[in-house]
Image (cartoon, rainbow, N blue to C red; front, side, top):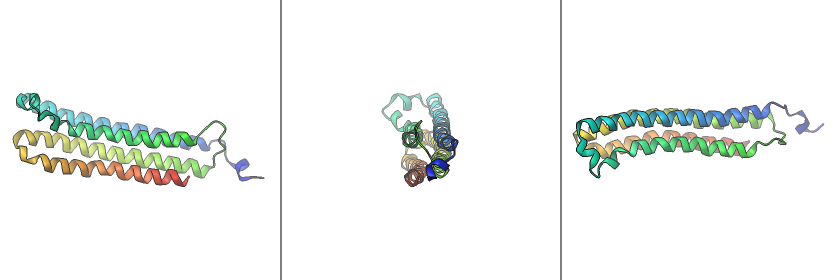
Length: 163
């Protein structure tokens, strides 16, 4: 009897769970980061509307853009996992769990990165309203928050390649 005949029929479930985890958690992190940073931008607009109308308003949108990238990480790993799953694919349980682990690593680090970007983005744009010299420090901290999601994507890609 071949190994493929011993593969359980429910193994693809774990691959689809990995796809769902990557998309749901990654998008939740991105949504939180966008919402929390948006609150800070709105706060800047209420106190210093001149900063919103000047060219410097783009600088306040950096946390929102960085939050959106977190959802793209989830999308990338979800597409890669989905390409490996098909109706006629006879998948091992090992492969299903590797896909689940890849999706979870991207999704949960996306939540952490989105939370970090949201908190730093909110405080950063409010601090930028008071003193423009904090901009470089805010960007550096945002990059360190974003790299959490990037680490998850790298681990997810490695796990997906091992399946």
